Length: 148
Image (cartoon, rainbow, N blue to C red; front, top):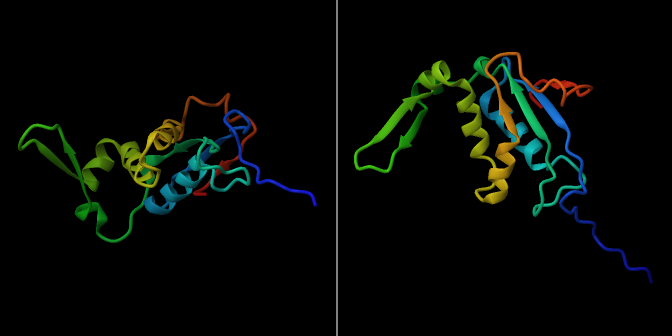
């Protein structure tokens, strides 16, 4: 009787691609979910929890993201320096005007594992508020994905 064993990808055995997502007109949460899946590599047959199997992700047009309902005025972001009484609050509308790429980064960060592996995955995410990005050499030949 032949024994078969389950294959687990080891570091360095997987090939990373560069994926380009166009955020124009996409809903924030749905786009963040698709990006988190691509960063983790959960859409690949070689997915393994203990190693980086995901791809590099480039997101363009982050300033054209869309949200549903009253989130623009009701969703709050918090930042705290560690000093007593120094918590800062920002509405989603303010964040989209000042740093639209940070909104998407925070949404994806919340969907990744909260450990060393999740931080490594987040480093592979490049978000740009406009249509241009400096990674043309890496994405040569890879198609642009609209939302997933």
